[in-house]
Structures are given as structure tokens and as C-alpha cells.
Length: 79
Image (cartoon, rainbow, N blue to C red; front, top):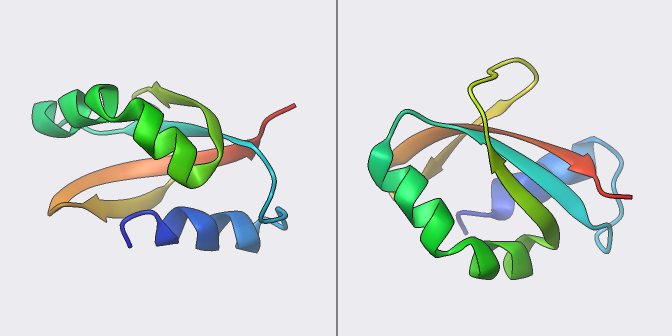
């Protein structure tokens, strides 16, 4: 369920459900950063992501709550 918002965002951008994506995440929460690193392979498998990158850029991102922790994400199609 946490990743449903990523799929909805991809659909809004016109992505196909089988498209591989790149995810960019902005968060100030150290626990969430740690979880993203620890579960990167699982998240990638669930979302068809080829990469999950942390950055501080807030533009063009949507808010997402993951286990009661806030972050901002953006996605783009992977080549």
C-alpha cells in the first residue's frame, strides 16, 4: 500500500505499468533514509525501479507517507 502512490503518480505521468522507473527521494528523516538503503532491493522489485536516489531537491515531487514518515518523491522513466 505504501507504494500505491508511486504507481498512481506513474499513471498520471502516462507511464505503462511495465515501465522501469527511477525514483528520487527527499527526506530529512534519518530513519527513513536508513530504511530506504536497507530495503532498496525490495522497494525496487515492488516498484520496478532501476534506481532509488536520495537528494535534497523538492521541486516536482509529490508528498508520500511511509510508515508514518514523510518524504517527497519524483519518478522518471528509466532508459
